[in-house]
Image (cartoon, rainbow over all chains, first blue to last red; front, side, top):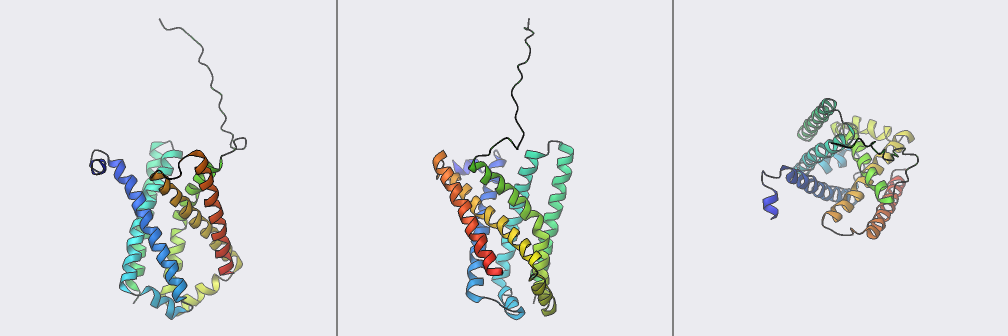
Length: 116
Length: 129
């Protein structure tokens, strides 16, 4: 039943589930972030840099940001669909949002790769 | 033959100043507003993260810049958007699995969300000030 809903016949269901799963993943990342900051309490540059440098933490941050990209893409799209009725205007706005999200993702990747 | 009846005009009331939104609607619309706000603030968040990790000098510049009261207010605004989106989002997930879906329970969970957001924002403000 659930698997049936995730086939090509119901593309909206996959997007609906993507929105929820990405939300759960980001919530878990945030809780871990708050917990780690509370435990380690990085108070200067060296400690802050050390906090972010483990490969697994950078990977987790990247995965969280990929979730954020999908979550924001679907979320802003839903908002635009509800309030912008002109299809042409909405398409351009959606394109701008998608470009911004791609730039944001590339930006995050460079931040995570460049720090050593 | 089609009877030429005058189309009955439905009463329309879209004046937002005269519509009193129920608490569930308030929590829901603020979930949207905070989501859009968070999306718009992503470049700022990325910029601060980039500067804070780039070098010690840039870290110190960012750290002292964020000490300014105006930036602290912006941070608190951002924190509000995050906490509201977070707690209201969890409430929506709970409703997705049919938990607390009756009107009475939904109203109760709306109040819980607003209360948690208020406490979280106050704790955050206390921590950074």
